[in-house]
Image (cartoon, rainbow, N blue to C red; front, top):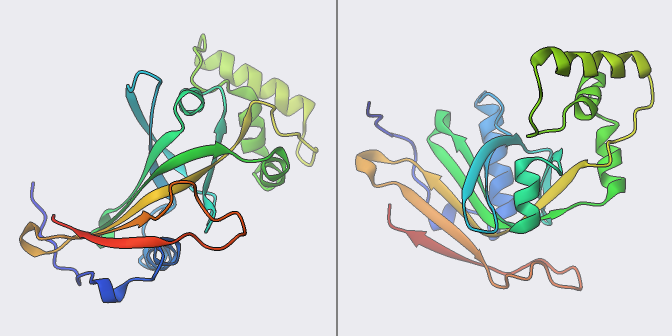
Length: 217
């Protein structure tokens, strides 16, 4: 199987001065192109011994501080982030022959921010967060359904359901951000932003400085 990319190229003069503005442009264009779940991103983590694992999670918010997703802290990804906070994110926007790859550190967000987001989730998703001890062994599908039914009886539609204590958000603070645009003859465009300081934004709130580099495809 072989695809031929005939999309417009990506030049240094086309992109924003910093990666979050550029990501916002591409994210908007991915939505306008009608891509299914453009906020779906592949999250790669590794344990303390460097053994990797990947899965797809959903982006729930982003700004110049980083990108936010939510999960169970006791899940495999949660345990691995606790051991090794270095992660990578990949947005595979195949329909427009684009990828965005970010590498950086994941850090837990505050409980107030988690609770605020949890209240916006559908009722069933709130119950599901309580019913599932993500990544743990469950005896059967029937057992999972029974736990959910018990919670649904305890918290009917309209109830105020608190966020589970082991469930919450992570913010990925990228140190590198690569924008990949497919081109003809496998001569793809790859532009990478590197944060001038791995420590993140300046303490006074000033935006981080970034350098832009072209990579060979």
